[in-house]
Length: 401
Image 1 (tube, one colour):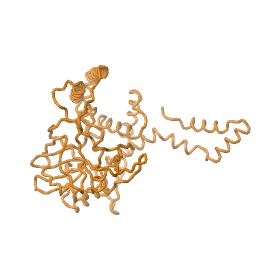
Image 2 (cartoon, rainbow, N blue to C red; image 1 turned 90 degrees about the horizontal axis):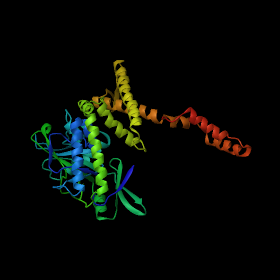
Image 3 (cartoon, rainbow, N blue to C red; image 1 turned 120 degrees about the horizontal axis):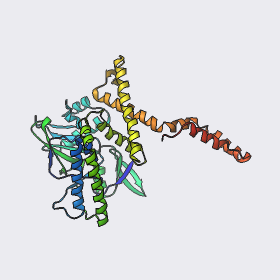
Image 4 (cartoon, rainbow, N blue to C red; image 1 turned 30 degrees about the vertical axis):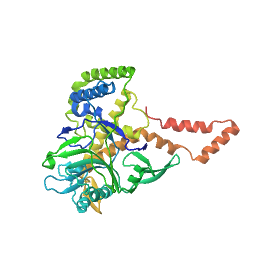
């Protein structure tokens, strides 16, 4: 779990151009490198051009200001505002953009469309965000509701919240800490929508300003511009990396364009590359390592995904189906639950493949009292019983290459 101290606003920096308009809904904030998977060689060129623009800015050569925003690590994503089709205020998750949208106007709607912690958090959002006098539709990331914690860091009392993977901590007696402590919820808005119908909204990304009240801590996605600039040697290294990226992009263009055509298919190579990288980063303390090693690991991961899909189909065709138990009722999986079950099984199989040796070793090692006894008699007799035992267990349960 990461830990981040907050003083005003801190987070993972993301670059965006103020006023950028698109017909696409902001269902997921993509990484820059994912452009080559989503949009092929054109996406790669777009990413390179964007990096060149940042390069110009950091070299002091930019003719215009580049707007930078902060990516807070919030969850879940919350969409709220006035439905242009009926003039009613609503809250929801990204499921408001589903083919069959889940739009919540009342607590009854929330209980019908959601369950668990998401339902509880949406009820808090409905009760409080409706008082902000939002004119259009906004999207943001929820930071906290009733899950604030008082902690002590280096002898200083802090108020903290962990909406996703990063823990934010603020001195409890600071002005910011007091604002957070008395709030019933915290949220940061980063996208606004406009349009006459919910299915044809236009998104505008960047800083979304608003007025908070005592019950809502409204964090800012704005990032104050700094005077940090590239040195000449840094510019030289950056330019060399860009040239290398452009050369690789030119060679890989045909396969990237082919891969992008199916990147939304959950069983495609492109889609799985993104999920694999996310899985690897979340479950590994090591770096990505050599390309050849990554290729081999991804091949195993992708094969597990396909095998899990085959196994699930076999189960369904065999008559047992895939079922969920909800409120003491047995019902067949929805498409989303089915897809998640396939992903979970593949991740589990991959984790067993990569880390199963650890569990096997733990089960093979003799109990601690017996190991201590070995160590004692090895010292008395000059034997190597304990060393031999450890070596045998490791040899029988080798770590994957």
